[in-house]
Image 1 (tube, rainbow, N blue to C red):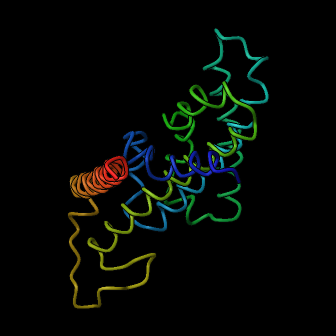
Image 2: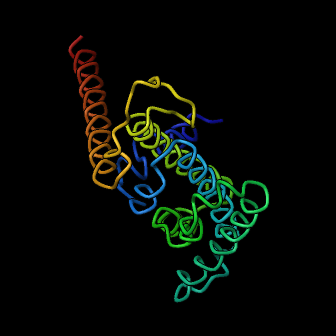
Length: 212
């Protein structure tokens, strides 16, 4: 993988994380991040849809009339969401039941539509697939972090396994929407602080190098 491609891949995970930096897909983020398992399932489902839809939209980008491009994107995305939904129902029925309506709602997830409009419609299939993988894994990572924290604080478990011991009563507040927004705010603040610290360090290194 070329260095520029590697940087593009890392961009979706860190610098331009769709959830923690761009603040996209908040509805599904809050709804499914009550547990790490649900968060991982939704993240992987969205990643699969992102990769497949990006590739197909990239292949058809010169054939789709500009006036109907959004409608065409929605139809393509809906096709892949239906496939993912049926696969979950067939092989992971328990997870499908827990995620419920939020799997079909991937069709209108602004992360998917944003990447189709801003990247896949303007680039070749290879870079579009990489962009879908990067953004999808970034979304999954953010969901897993939020889901892990909320599940751990809310019930003392992680992926269903007890971590904090039977004496921990659990704080149900973190499993409710207000607790979810509170956790999200702290995670976004932590990510922003780390990014600013990294930028400051790079600027200091550059200044020091110039001075020497």
